[in-house]
Image (cartoon, rainbow, N blue to C red):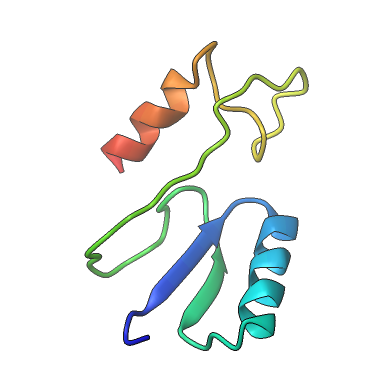
Length: 81
């Protein structure tokens, strides 16, 4: 309950659902912000959890496309950032 949680996503619908779920759960320590991985995010973090899409999307939509057959491109971006 004392943690400060930053919920980041590139998908506006995912952010909306996150905000709704946090409100329904009565959780007030979650900030919901649009971001492409950690682009534009400042501060220090004790823990970073990522759940990116590890799939190919024929339309290469940013919020679905994991890059490469095994999602390696996106995985490398996460580690680099």
